Length: 349
Ligand SMILES: [Zn+2]
Image (cartoon, rainbow, N blue to C red):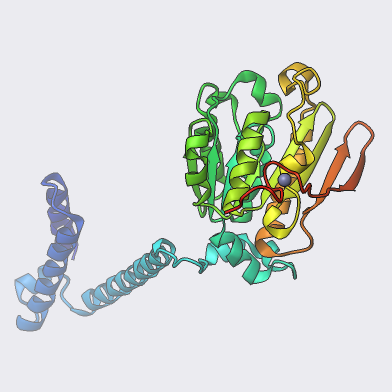
């Protein structure tokens, strides 16, 4: 018997040196085994070849049975693994969820106001976020985490060291990278089940209408008034709700501008941009680190409410949060008939 083992091992070793595939080497060992068994069946007891290969066939049969069991077990395991991998890589049809996604969004689906239908609406939603800075950071992170299917982000800035005190979507290693690509990397790392569309450019009048057509909802987290008015007018023309947030030092505000639903637009409330002395930028006036997180999270929450139909969005209302004293209040906003953007005299459509 030992002689056969030595011969088998020599064959295996020779095969390994010659780089014969493992499968072929197993086949040769199998042939050797069948050959030895055939000798035991064909030759009479006491034949020198039989004597040299273990005298009796029982030992070989037991060995063969054991090997067959090991092979069957491994084969079954491989098939199961193959099936699991196939299930994971099967592309999911639009509007349906993979097992991993259902598990991921379980805390949403458990909410009566969201449920499976709300999560499906989130997956089907297309949201455009203007600005990937202080407010954009939490907005983008929570939209991605919440499972908003398509998220567009437009911004022409690159990540700077001074951003990192509050713009938590960016990292030290990504200083110098366009913010939209830095944000995309963070969002896709957090949730690979959403699609991110980065636009590394300044939002300008010549592309804004074309861009809005691709989306159902707009979120404005920019810090300059030209872009705010541009986004507001384009959202009004496209009939899209606009979630708007703003920050100064220790105070933030959030509202949903939606003239298509009878709510005021941004220009109804702020008909003119304030003079630069009255509205200094974050760079000049400063801003406390967690404040964009608070206000941006509220903006993302309004988006989830608008998409799922949960609760009452801040249409015609504004929440003002004073971080220094931990106070918040809500004011009612009225549409202006003489608004130059959405008023009665303005042709809509
Ligand atoms: Zn208006």
